[in-house]
Image 1 (cartoon, rainbow, N blue to C red):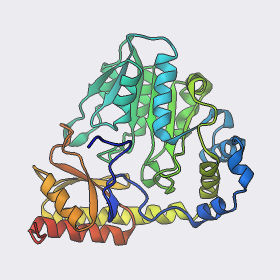
Image 2 (cartoon, helix red, strand yellow):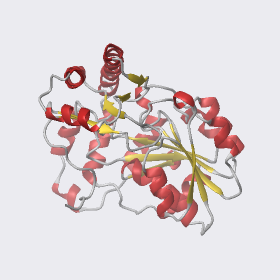
Image 3 (cartoon, rainbow, N blue to C red):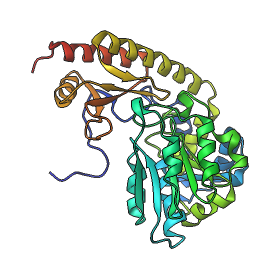
Length: 347
């Protein structure tokens, strides 16, 4: 059967394969959606209120905010604005590995060439190699912190070194998971007109189904992206949901605390089971379960736990990625993993 749009639905069970918020969104989000009027749906949305709310949240000028249909769209539009829009035909992007799929996909979509930089041992970020790879053809550098799929952070000083070493290159710093650990680059952004910071409401805020992201940057970096972004890319329901999510100041820290404890429980389980893992600053943990991974993934699925297969990536052989969310969900995942690896799952 041909693959349909998006990722295949794994069916019933715990969805620990796409780094979603396993506890759902704030109740205020559903309340806001229920209060919507018929004309809120029948008319094109105005984004000024949400832009101002995001500017307050991220402590930047509203002119530095561009709303996107999920951060994925922001990544693609950034490539379009700075490569296709500039009519550059021999452009290159730099992508440290392992990498989030939209970076190479967006590079290919605009006809550019991806220069892929392997990470160091234990996924140490290859700062010097990234800088050494910059050439006159380099138009964009994609940096992900915490990294998907490893959860490793790029030190702020290294982000600054890269931005300073390539002042005519757009550096897109993807902070999709920064609410779960680490320090944002945003306080440094005023000094770097060539940097775009990407954020999303899909993960920590539990709005993956709404598809709302944001690109943040100075006009030099943001205006070419704004020029190619469609005018009504965020729907009115998603806008109301995001405003309500931002208004609930207790939701995010409460969930982030559970994520942090879930990560610790996953680490402890891996140590008991003798599995390699990497400490993460995101809402997931990458674990090496060995080759082949399919029997483990299938065994977990039969127990109603769905995890992400990372073994297809040469940079992460034998690995799976497990979302860390509510403690009850993490405990269930650990129980299923222990059962799968001890052979107690019926084949």
